[in-house]
Image 1: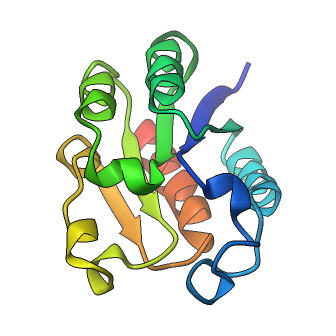
Image 2: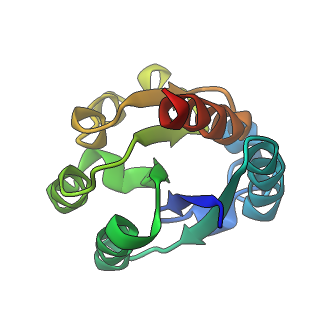
Length: 146
């Protein structure tokens, strides 16, 4: 059985490819899942991609990942900047965590510069478009083998 990477996405990421394509591009979450699955398979891993607009659902998925995932890639969307609950849940997860943002949050509004998730993340990828997810999967493969 291959080790699973859970790829968790927060609010509005279900609209990826449709919402503000000048910021987020035209790729969809289905494209992200396909790209990440291919990268993971090449590393002997698998991915499970999930998206919710609800903070509590994301917290529940992080709790479940404690038993079912080797690592987490997370793009919490706007919850990045507000959710202590997600931070606390991630702090209870023992595997690697990589935070991903499609846009460069540091070039955007000042309130987006603060990330609670970064306090737990083993790495942060921002501003690389949806390619950031595949980069995160590659990084996790490295972390899991060292």
